[in-house]
Image (cartoon, rainbow, N blue to C red; front, side, top):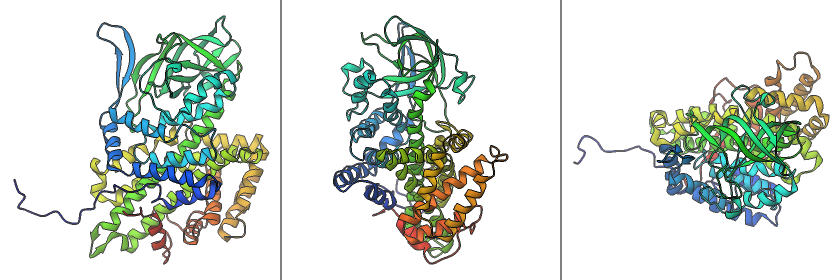
Length: 545
């Protein structure tokens, strides 16, 4: 039946069919900056291919379907046998397959591997964020496994493989595997030293049987898991496979899947171990130290993932404003909307530049860079992940009522936004970890100060912020109660220093004036008026959008 009451006008075309990587100038410039010239053409080529895939209608449909049809737990087969299977929509497997083939679990052994992988993770997460969980843990497991050369030789080639193989079977029969993680328990959560899962040694070297539970086991369909349990020598790290070498299923009873706010496409489970076979990773009693490198890598992915959500939200907001007309003109040309969009773009670019700087430090892997990461990662994880919800919420509002409708994709971004601030240690955990680095590892603060010192003299507001930070660091009274304030300043000073060095003047000037100079309100869209805001918005607009 033909519509007779109205014609459809002034509706924004979908942001589709574009190169997510090339359209992100802050990201593409970061790759050019941090990747050596000999590797750069290959890196740019692979990221461009991934960017075009991420911006395609196909990938956007996969993301929508994976969230519309979330995973389903099947504990038993029709005869009553336990199977503990998690079934996913085919689109989930398509997303994972494309991600693995693009090298998003392969960073540790190729030139500029961490920058290339982080950039790819930032690009592909914009298609769908939930499946990033198993990708992140698989990537991050490598340094933990390297504490045991025999385990690393067996598992690392499969973890870094560019082949995704669906289904559970012995790892030696697969061309690639995924790894999950199970640390937290219901009585302790982040306080893993209160864990009660027990590990009983067997006669075989490094073999144990685990008995206990895990309150949050991520990606339970994975081929194996790094878990913490109490051995005779104390809290220890173990590798627990889903399928044993003889082809039988390990004891891995999935009690239920979590019903989460967002991250709907990804399964998170409560699991029980009852004589579950596992292999020790590292020494007995040094489980936290063994697994801490995995945690550090996944925390960096929380920063990258939040930067991805911010970027996609800002791209959608700028795209919408470039087409939508109101009150006699395009929204993007209205001074107040331009101020909002520019403010959002500053936050997004600062997050991207910081995430890629941290990734480059992993590639350099010197004592100086490791010391820098020790303070910079928890500070970045604290601040960037917290800014994500605010940015996505404001970007959604730029679309008005259209943004509040599921079909826009913005509600899914908003539900996802708080996740990275909770995963791998919430805000207080990150702030206290940063304090621990300041107290116990003076080389971490030295490395941080040398990093931000590279921008000294370029902006008086940045210089003043560095001086103020040093004053705060000199006052240790009640420092724990001030930890959030202090770590926020560390992150902002670091972001400001990076933007002063590498971003266009209009970006660094607006960031330093607002975030460091105090010329800013309490909501987005309160930047001081200036002619350069249009340039900031234009830089954030997705090319071809």
